[in-house]
Image (cartoon, rainbow, N blue to C red):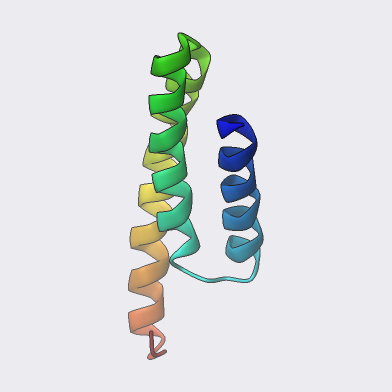
Length: 76
């Protein structure tokens, strides 16, 4: 059941990122961490390895989009 919930969160985050909502990257970052926890709990280390690669990308995008939003003068 958890894998379906985590996938739903991931799809929601991707949808929101496509709509250029900066905090969608925060949602995806949290989701990557949850996938790592899930992978550890279920002994599926592939999820942990994937999270190690995805999490920095999501963190970078969060910072980049947030900075761009401030320089563009948009409100939160």
